[in-house]
Length: 86
Image (cartoon, rainbow, N blue to C red):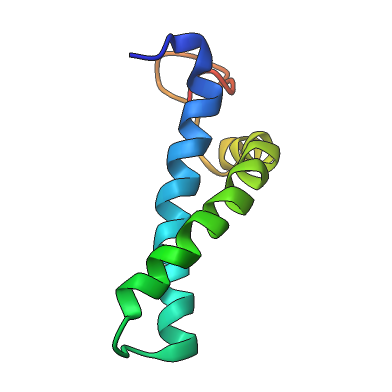
């Protein structure tokens, strides 16, 4: 297991991986449709998407957490939600 101090990097890495996988699939489908070799083309596009998505996720994660904190009520057991709570 990775030490918990690296959670701030592991979470965006996983999120970027999942999101880039799905979005590269959508983009590939939209551009070429379901043709022969579709899966191979999708899997070639995914690492490039992930390489772009991960640093972006690192940059925007704090902003997204702050925005989500504005939209959602704080947990019942505390008066203030912090970035570490989420």
